[in-house]
Length: 507
Image: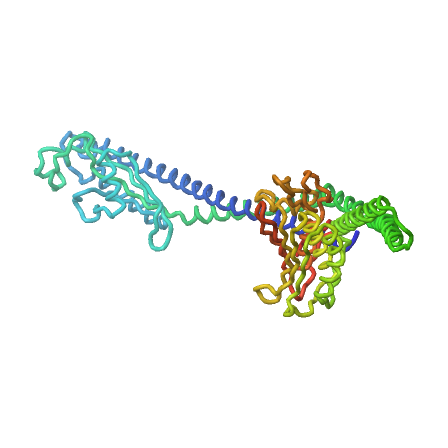
């Protein structure tokens, strides 16, 4: 397998590796986002469960004191004697003792219009009380931050019940047994709320550790999958491709040998036929007019066939990666003369005026003279062949408007090309439809008036390919019935454009 094939395989392996890395990276990022959301939801669920449990315990203590209120304040002889022990006092006492031994926990009882300053609500608690007052759910919570630490704020509503009326019921404005003024509340009114602050640092730390473990597992699993996938791709894809490439290399070698043989076997007899017709034409014996006509046909068709063979072999060599571009000093005047030597006899025979011009300002080029000659020969002979008698074909070379480039232009007075065919004519084996009343340009030539395309459909494809190999390009201006102008722009200092082994331009 050649250097280019090995390079292609390395590039394929690299692309697969990059693709795997990108896929794993994207999957990892998606997993991190998903896992973070899951862990955050887990933290929220755990701390909410803890808050609800703690609230039930505090509520149980509150309810117990509320139910035992009569027994606490009644002596054995049945005399009522208020002991200053009631549900609010008990609840606050239990909360105070709990928070003293639980670092970061806060449990408070708050209300609007508090009886003591310690019961005044903060912003969160005020939002909770408003939520309960307007008929919201019986609990209110949110994630927050206190003293730079993440916490969970939780609040649960306290409603007025029957035993609460002694201190908070009617008549409003009268003092209760504790010495505070009654509010005139009724059963079911919002008396206040239990407010809790639960630190969640440990939960966050645990969630982070769990996410890290999950991520490590995911990355490990992804690496194992990537390695297994790489091995499978190597065995099931890369190895068969290498075998196929070796087979293609062998077939390309056979094709190259075939082209060399065909080049010799086809060109040699055609050149001999043309040489024999030239010898016959130069002989001194008297020639019959019919003989001259037939020999002329043989010569013309031999030239046509030789040109088709040359184009076919050049295209085959180009696509097999065997058509080399040889850069050297090139005098465009010599190239133009060599190309016109092929086109001028055809123009004279058809009665087409063929003119040529080379701008003296064009310097000696660093390019491939043979490639430039083939470009001019194909464009000029095509233009001559399909321009009617009395028409003109102009071949010119001039400096382009941009620095460092030369424009080779072939203009004719033929039938022109329809707009829909202007891109397609440069494709291999593609030819334009015949225009009404005259010819139309095809990829290797043009249609005659009978609508027949005598070319092989390779001429313009070869012109475009050779121009691109020299770092240039081809442009076309044409209008039906007004002729066509082909312009090939090539740099004065060409740098060969690389091709892959299938002949595609890589640049």
